[in-house]
Image (cartoon, rainbow, N blue to C red; front, side, top):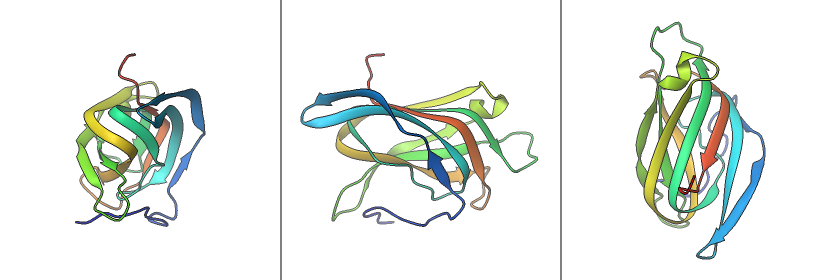
Length: 147
C-alpha cells in the first residue's frame, strides 16, 4: 500500500483535539516539540497531526475505551514518516492494551532510529475490526529520549 501526503476526511466522527505543549527544541535543523491531545470516536485509518522528529518518539495513551462490550479491548497504531512525493515510511506497529484498564492506566510505545522529518501515527486496528470507534482521554507524543 502506498501512502503519500495527508489524508483528509478519513473519519467524519474522528477528532484529535488539544494543542501542542510548550516544550520545543531544535536538533539538526528540525524543531522538535512534545504535544498532548485527545481522541474522540476515531476508527481505523485515522491519522494524528504531524510532528517534527529526529531519532525517537514515544506515544502514550491514557484512559482508552471503545463502544464495544468486549472484556479485552485493544488498539494497534503505527508511526509513519510523512514523505512528500514518495511513499510514507512505516516505523512499525505497537498494540495498546493497558490504557483500557481504567482512566489513569497508560499504554506507551517507543520508536527509535527515526529519520529527521514529519511523523504521525495511524490507528490501524481496534479490537480486530475496522469499524469500531476509539476514545482516548490523553494522547501524549514525546520526542525526547532523555526523559
